[in-house]
Image 1: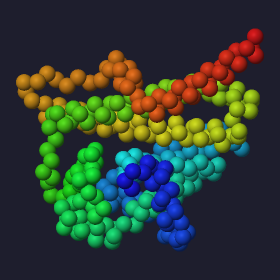
Image 2 (image 1 turned 180 degrees about the vertical axis):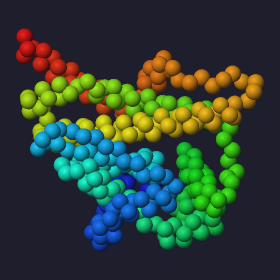
Image 3 (image 1 turned 120 degrees about the vertical axis):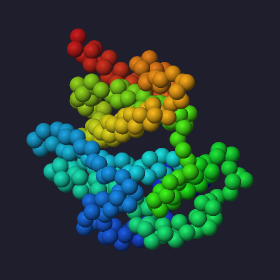
Image 4 (image 1 turned 135 degrees about the horizontal axis):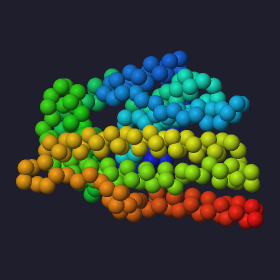
Length: 294
């Protein structure tokens, strides 16, 4: 929805579909892995889960997460995760169910028939959505979305798209991917090597329950999964840029550590605010731990 952020958009979807969500869940409750696999196949992506083990004995749990091959209207990627005290397979099934539920909330899990009708309408309307008005668009997002729809429609028909990647467009994509990669690495760097501190915080009652600690581990798992995907994407783009580089230009330089530091310095304000808050809390408890040890 135009003008909504991700949370508002999701709340709107939940309110709109609240009456029949239970009935729709029955369509994928029995075998969510099969349903999700078909969705990934239709979208042209491989279904890859990320796993992490935590705890031992009775507190042993599996954390499973997956990045979904769709974006919200606000441009944010969707993902799903699950925590299970049973087997790794059970965690995978629960994660697949949560993924199906998330996709269904956005009305994109079972969109095959709907999509065919919508695709025809988009072609008739030159790939503009029915509620889009370029007159009021000041960000260029409507044109970007239109071009993406056109490209997907041509690719689905097995036709070559008219868009040709150039060295310049690839370089821009590499820079954007590198920036996001550095942001994810920065988030992980702020959280690593703090296991002892987290235990100390739990002893002081800072964590309300084991669930709080698992939520942190789940977030790390999702970040690591995203980090791997970004590295693969960057490598792919760099290979294409190498091929597309004009003969009279110098070779493309890969990001150095110094480049990474500069990119970290350009983290978004929201990300920096979150990281600084986490650091302040952990510094506070680290100081208390040191005081108690003396």
